Length: 241
Image 1: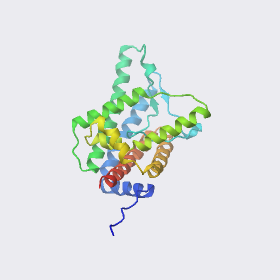
Image 2: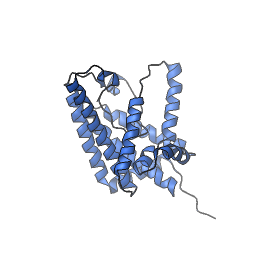
Image 3: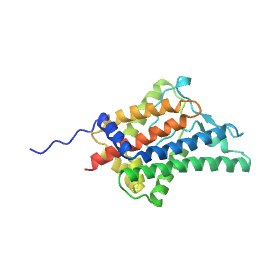
Image 4: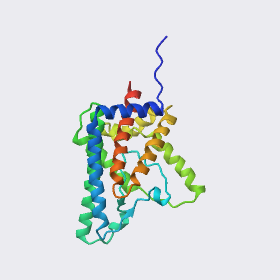
């Protein structure tokens, strides 16, 4: 009789991710530094004249699952695309530069973490590919103000897609071409939906709650980003064996 393959459960993935972070504490350190950087930029953004959208945390009665297709660190002060219209050149350059710094730091940390945990080599091409996908997702993000009748089905579809494409960030970081990434992710997650949904629920809710901490929420959010990477690494390694 052939040995039974260990089940991919939410608990097993979270335990596997925790084990990987204990063996590689530098991953936590790198994301902590990214969180400090993002918190500092959030502080600067509160003092400039460029309009920002503030993060609505648990204090505002808002609860959400902050678990993206790519590794997510919450920006407590984000810049709507509409805010860039009619800006004076110096403020436009200032705003774009800050967004590139914090977005670039998140890309570098994510690619570094995945390649370290998966024993791959980080390359400039992988970082550029990851950054391009992040930019597209950022530009495509749309806030939809909808009632329960429309919002609930949209939310269910969004969570379903996040679950089915959960390994996308790991595949991009380790060199998989963009055109193959989403197809490979869809195949890898077949039959593991509920386990990954549990991961999205636990990590996504923790991300939102930690990001709600005043002033330093981005630092707390960055720590859940390290967990995100480690758990997806555990999943990719399991399904690749």
